[in-house]
Image 1: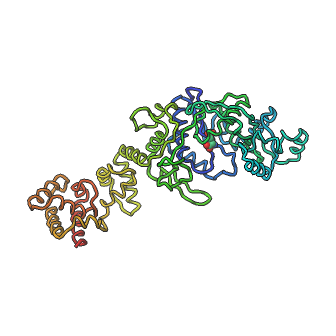
Image 2 (image 1 turned 90 degrees about the vertical axis):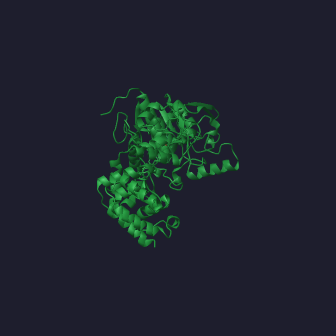
Image 3 (image 1 turned 180 degrees about the horizontal axis):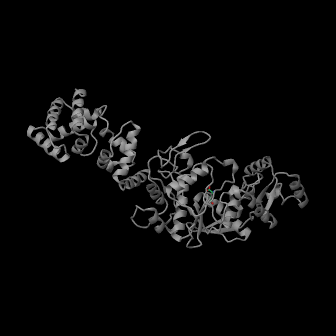
Length: 510
Ligand code: GLU
């Protein structure tokens, strides 16, 4: 059952299944989602797959799974249907030709029969002439083979013979085109710099431009919120609305997501080169088999992922940084989306994850730890796992860190950190440890505060250096200098295991 929208606001996320969804795309979907929820409107997913050459198998399913994982819900889309379907452009392909033809009839578009060689010749000629506009444009269209330069009869004959053709938009020769953008203000471009874009291709499919405008119109989209990379297409899109006599939607072009150093756009191709995922989920390229990492598989919680992504380009105007999805939907407005690119910040992303990890209950994290241990052939009971988690959880950024950071609770150190040994283990240490083991053996009950009181008292009474003894004991138990409160470690390990580890260290570090 579809929820009744509270308003007529309709937004869409319109990805092309040409590969995995980049996190910039997820951010676009998120902002659309916030906007729709805030306004009580509808959120549409439309798959723009008219470019058959760039189609990648598995990409659509990947996109849908990514959005679902991020918690972005759609009211209409290819997997749930809706009153304006179908929502996959390849399933709508019979619908587009008549719109292209309509523009030809209105003399706002034309048939073009130029071969690839002819187009190539044109481009070379214009480049050699250093023409201000080197594309197929108003200045040269009459030099080419199209229904504007040919007679009506010649054109009809070519069409009847089945000579391949495209339909091009007849861009006005010299006209200022001004379009309002919610984020950028008024954008003005002179049409002399634009080209006669292909609207309909010889393979019987519309281009992105035509299908996108027709569908936004038919699906009654009120706001087009999309990435800045589409800004250059805005004048053409606006002209297409004019040509059809349709009211254009409100446009908002979101700032780019930049690499951490601010040098350029964070692109799909950055893959794992920069040391962090650029895709929400892990992706295996179906052609090359190349695997790119994903936020989900890297251990990010979706709450953390959307929280940091939401702040890359939008700011709440307050100091608040932690937002739930509901809070984001309530707080978001296009007025607070910046114009300049937003730099990706890995430390920030990690710190958001740490924040959300800290909200998780011990038993959930213990489950992750036990799963990790199981993978290494170690079984433990939930009580111990919960105890360990409660001791080490503060430092973990990802739940999967718990295994690495807590492994010594379940597996005695197989070797000892050389630097720590050099610093903490000297001639008298073995003797001290043996004596300390003797003391520990007699302590009851085996509980952290009891152990702490007895051990510290003994060290003082013996006149040993407190730090030296405790650090050496830690080295025996953990194998290095890290870890939580030493007496808590003893407590969890239990007497037998603790004494065994001391004996082993004394033996090995001779
Ligand atoms: N299919 C386009 C893309 O892949 C959609 C652009 C738009 O939102 O108009 O990003």
